[in-house]
Image (cartoon, rainbow, N blue to C red; front, side, top):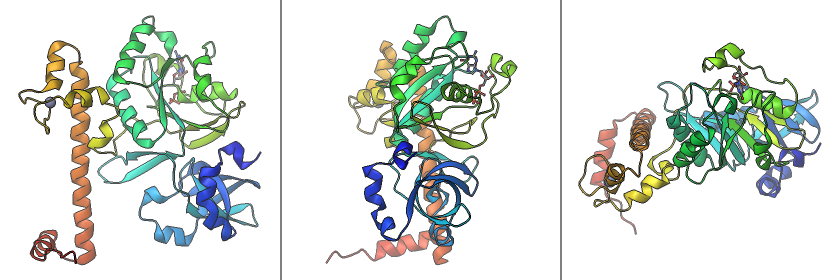
Length: 359
Ligand code: GDP
Ligand code: ZN
């Protein structure tokens, strides 16, 4: 199998030129476990770690290789490899790290299509689809909404219609990943050498889906009793890129209970295009759509053409990304204060005093 089978192409080859001149080889990260990467190279699988220089230069965690990344490596004798650089990502799923830390975490890179998987059981939630969709649009990959556990619903068409409204312009497919289910609807998106990532909370059936597509029990799945109650469990532990029998590449990302956004106001434009279109007709340019007069968004809610739940969801995500912007700001200030040993307010005063001259 060659690198082309793992998705290598001209767009990466161009960026790789300076590294090939240094005698390095391209490789794709197919599994990531803490600091250790499992790599696919022209010489087969190797495990590798980043070089000391890389570690020294990395601005933060998001610079480190993740599953799906193309990297520049130097092979050493004992089947190992040293990673010297990560090639620019064509797409990347970025979320905020869990907890208080204001830091981005990249879950997967160089993804062409993302399957946003939801389970049509008790855990089904439109708000969560909107949240995942925001991250997906932001990543640069094309989203497809996959509604799994279709066997549990008799009102399938109803649910699909509902989802189509919250995901304008995004394909929505319903499948059943369990043995008897039909996965035909996914085929158009499973293209040889293209990378598909699965994103979704734990328990939605991602492992079951991958096992079915692979035709083998590669990933551990949760006991059925949990699924019947619609309860998710943390079942997948590593991120891995696998090659399907048909040649498509699939990345599983670990299930998560909560996906914290790492974007800004602009990142909400695409997933909430219907609301942004309405907003263009609000009386005030900076209308917050909460209680201003002449608000076209509120008017649409009043007329019944916009679901109040969807507006609430939009406002909630907007609060979240604005709060994140504030926290990023505070973090930048602290870093500056630490680096200079001086207070931010003092520095600000000085900058204001000495207006730059553009001569
Ligand atoms: P993951 O955490 O997203 O990887 O989810 P799993 O693949 O572990 O699945 C969670 C549970 O849902 C398991 O008990 C599966 O058997 C069950 N499950 C997965 N797909 C389906 C489906 O299409 N229908 C039904 N009824 N259950 C499913
Ligand atoms: Zn408005």
